[in-house]
Image (cartoon, rainbow, N blue to C red; front, side, top):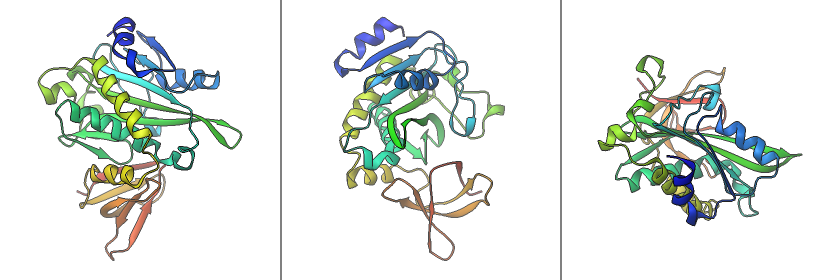
Length: 259
């Protein structure tokens, strides 16, 4: 993948702008700065290698040269989007899931921000916001995808099992094509972000639905319950041992199947 091949592949998407780097610290940091400096809606930052990539909870995101995808998309919220900004992580998750389906792979979404293939993490999402006073000026959606086998971190460094598209397909797809699949899907889902159908499809793709899971929320006690579904804002709904609803909000949370 290089800048020329990427521009050619994405030519029909009408990007607001494109910044490509052979190597960068963090695509999200670059996108946040670009957004604050007036980047247009649907501008994209892509890197072949990311040396200081990060996921949620300040975890390092492993992005070795030539084998992974690191990209950050800048969205300027439209009026129809504004009441539903909490669904943005779902927008990214559904778009990544659709890209996997296009490749012939059955994905699951591990709430709130991971894509699983065969129960193993293949992609992750980090959404950050540029504020103007109390209004969200722009959203930066960071997405990392393990495309080649060498993108999977060493087993001893993993907090959750991981795999790659190459592991699942037997060969690595072209990264430009994966980006095209993700962004094409995101454009479609963006138009539906305020609909009930958006939540329904997100809910249908949830990993561990109907199973007992445990959620560790920051410094609070671990929550156990049956994964029931989603609230309208994208929060997770569990059922406790008394069959009462327990709502888990976005934030410093980590979900695992119960041992």
